[in-house]
Image (cartoon, rainbow, N blue to C red; front, side, top):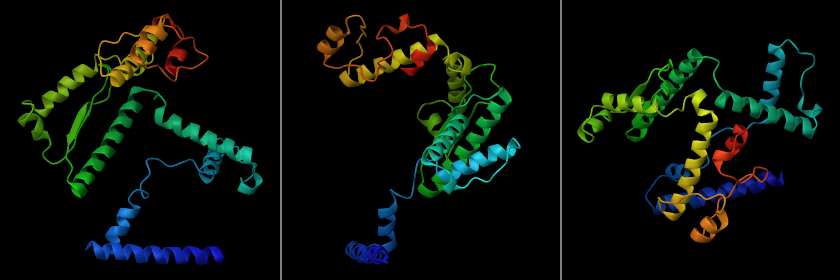
Amino acid sequence: KELHDALKSFLHSQNAKLEAIATANNVTFDHIKGLINMKTNYHHSCCAMLQNALVHTKSLEVNTELVKVDLEVHLLSQSEEELLIEKLQEYHKLKVHGTHMNNTAMAHDVNYTVDRITKELENLHDQTGIYATLFVMHSHVNDTIQSTWTATNNSANFWQDVIQQPVTDIAHKYEQWACTQGQNIVEHNNLVSVRKQVTKTIFDGFSGCLRARNIIMNYLNYKHSIILAYGVKLVGWPTNIKFVNLSSMGIISEVIRL
């Protein structure tokens, strides 16, 4: 009761202050409330909650015909609750980042996602007037993914008016470029490709800090050639991975960790 009264009193005083601000600035009370709540009404992602974890666990049991007893929250210990939530998070991560079983499934997922993003962009255009162009290209000549592009309103005219090329030509060149990058599922995860990615990340990091493009990473004489010479150092290198030139690393899992 005391907590309820305290919150009620706080909200009353808050609304009074918001009304005063609205009056002083010649705007509506609802407009002020919208500005106050704008940062709290939108979340980038949903956290894994215990109730979702229970439903997920139950669905696994139902699908495998292993249902024996109903799950109840009060029957679970703290460690059991944490384990269920962890399993749910792993399941979500697999759904988002897991490799598709075949090209058909991959193409279907791409089409569905592109369609959803297109609708979101169109809605944003209707609501805010934004301009957007989306290009989606496959990364291997043998992929069954259909390369496509979409544009809100008359955004496609930008490429012809400013870049002096039709958007279809831009998309075609983008597709050709994408297929030469070696970033499809198989090529993206081989040792040479991963080394290349890590090397580029390190180089871009140093270049961004020093605004210079001629830095050469020296692993053997790292302290003098990098730290003392430039006043920067590489952070985040796992302590259980030997600090050596990437070309000397032959275990892909270690390079991926970098």
